[in-house]
Image 1: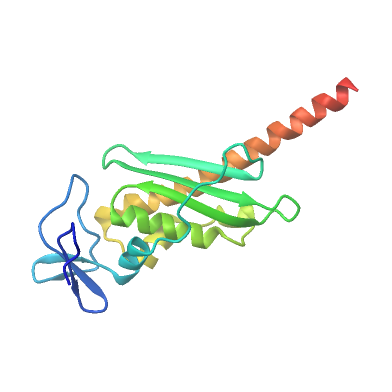
Image 2: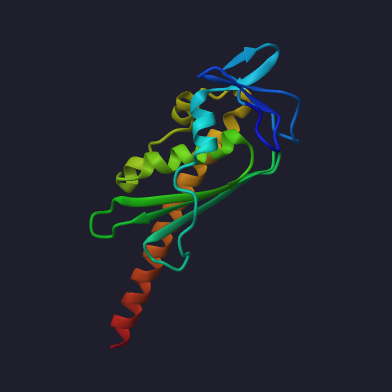
Length: 177
């Protein structure tokens, strides 16, 4: 089945062949080679074609942390946001916007799925190697999973900085009274 606007063919239930080349840094994520062309693993294809949690939250919301990371060498840019329940400290929602290859989009999508429902310290233990293994990313695409890990850490750091800043403002107001 040929996709309009693309040069990708379905090649069985697990693999997708990539015919021709794409842009710079658009080498396909390969878990196997089929007929001389590299193929995406079915999880990469699934998260690329049906990305979970695409969107964004209001940056001004004090319960939202935003991580914005990029890899200048390949042109991938990832924005991952988390919404935290301040009473429990759990991440109740997450979303992303990514400009980049299919592996970067899939890594972002997986990251948002994995952080939901977890405590802040728990998400900091998510490693790029776990994301890469889950998606069966080849070595040439490991930077995509590294971006996802960095985006998670940056979002947590941003949330904690916002929380500290708001706490400091609250203490300043109390001192004035």
